[in-house]
Image 1 (cartoon, rainbow, N blue to C red):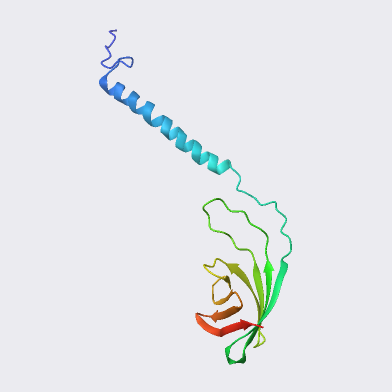
Image 2: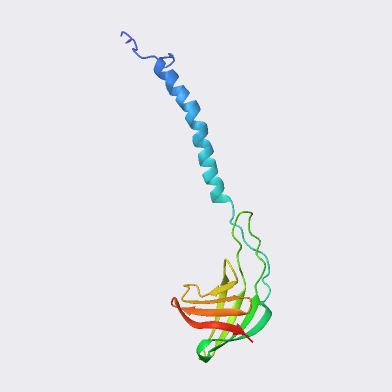
Length: 151
């Protein structure tokens, strides 16, 4: 029997093999780096806070007289101190317990404020804002307790 001559040799260097090798040596390290980063994100545990949260500390109790004979009693509480990374906005943790003259009582969480101290429900339906010796309450974007002054 005659042996057939192979027309293709696997150990021959061709221009195509050079380009394929060059592409592999360039792409595989980047692909490996990307896969490694994704894997690191998977196995790195998320930060879990082990800090013991102290009960809220009463800071001040203030009474306000408002227009139309309305009144507000506000009890201000300090929350735990939260450390944020440089460049991040502060994370307010305080709260206020309000007793309104119509008999309603509510606790609102402190939110970021440009001026004064601002407290709101999570949906911002009720907002209590105080600055210095004045305050006001808005409910569903309408001011319901206006021109409130500390007494």
